[in-house]
Length: 210
Length: 210
DNA sequence: TTTTGGCAGTAACAAAAGTTACAATTAAAA
DNA sequence: TTTTAATTGTAACTTTTGTTACTGCCAAAA
Image (cartoon, rainbow over all chains, first blue to last red; front, side):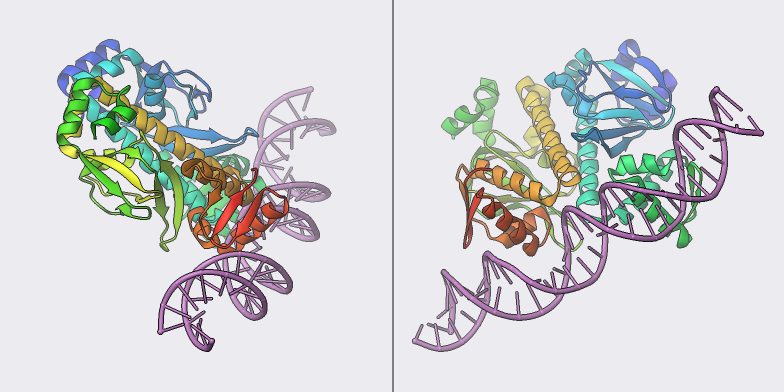
C-alpha cells in the first residue's frame, strides 16, 4: 500500500498525511463490472484511486442510464466527498470500468484532515474542480453535439481509459451509456466503419483513427 | 453590510469569521443584466450573494449559450472558488438576472479561512455540493427531457427566482438560454397557451398554472 | 446435434427539433 | 407622422433521433 500511495500521491500529500493514510486506510480490489456505489446509498468511506478506472453514471426515471465521466488513478469521487460530509444519499452510480484498486478512507478522517493538512485541502478542492470541469464537458456533449459526435467522443474516451484500441462493448451497452437506442448506435457505427475509422466485430470495435 | 451578512449568513458563520468578512469584504451592487464574470477571465475575488440572483451560462463554439443554473441569496460561485485556488480561467459566464447585492471577498482570505474556520470549510463544501447537484439537474434536463418539458422547467424556475408570475423575456432570449431556436420556443409556448397554462404578450409571458 | 438467446444489420416509419421564409403587429426612432 | 427595427405567428420543409419489426449470424446450453 505504501508503494501505491507514494507512486500516485507522494507529490501531492505531505509525509505526515501519507503516514495517517497508511494507518487508517484499507486497500480494496474491485473486479471490472463490480458496483461501488448505488444511487440512494449512504457513503461511509472515501475512495482514493490507485489503479484502474471507475465510471460514474446518472439514472433517469425509467431506470435508463447516462455516463457522466470516468475516474482514474489519482482521482477521488467528489460526490462521495459531499455525501459524506453532508450525510446525503448518493445521486450517482459508480461501477468499476476495469479491475481497480482503491484505498478506502473512513469519513471521520476527512473533516479532521481538512483542518489539519493543507495538502489534503488542496487535493479536495482540486478534485472538486476536476469534477465540475468534467460535468461541464458532459453538458457540452449532450447540449451542443449530435449523437454521431458524441459517439466518437465516447469511443475516444474509452480508448484512452482502457489504453486499448479494441473496445469490448456491444452496441446495446454503448447505447445505454449514451442514453440512446441500440439501433441508433448500430447505424452510426456502421457509418464510421464505412468511413474507415473503425472496424466492427461481434462484441468489439477496433478503432483505426478517429 | 453587517445586517445583510447577519441576515443571510449568521446561522452559518461563526462570529469571528463574520468580523473578518466585515473587515476585508466590500459590498457591491450589480444592475440586472450586468456581467460579473466572462469566460476566460481570471477571478480575483469571491462573491457572497446577499440579495438578487445571478445566472450562470455555458457557451458553445459558435458563441451560443446554455443556462446552467441560478445563484440566489446565501449562495456563492463554486466555479470561482476553484478558479481562485487553482489559478485557472473561468469556464462560465455570470450575469445578474436581477438587481443583485454581493460581498466580494479577496481570494487570499479563502485559503486562510479554510484552515482557520470550520464554518467556512462547511460553507465551501456545502456550496460545492449544491452546485454539483444543480449541474446534475441540468444534465437530467437536457439528456432525459424533451424541449417542451425543458421549457416548462425553465418557466417554473424563472418564476421562482423572480418571485413573479410575469416573465419579462422575449422568445429569442428564452431560446438562447435553452440553446434552441426562436421558432421552436414560439411553437411550444403557443401550445402551452392553447392548453391554458400560460398567456402570451409582447415581451412577456404570464404564468397561469404549470 | 439441436435449440436457445444474444448480437448486429437494415428497412420503414414516426416523432422531435431545427431551418427558412414570410407576414402581421407593435414599439421606438427619425 | 413616417420609418425602422424588433417581436411574434405560422407554414413548409429538412435533419436528427427514436421506434418497430424482421432478418441472419454466432455461441453457449441442452
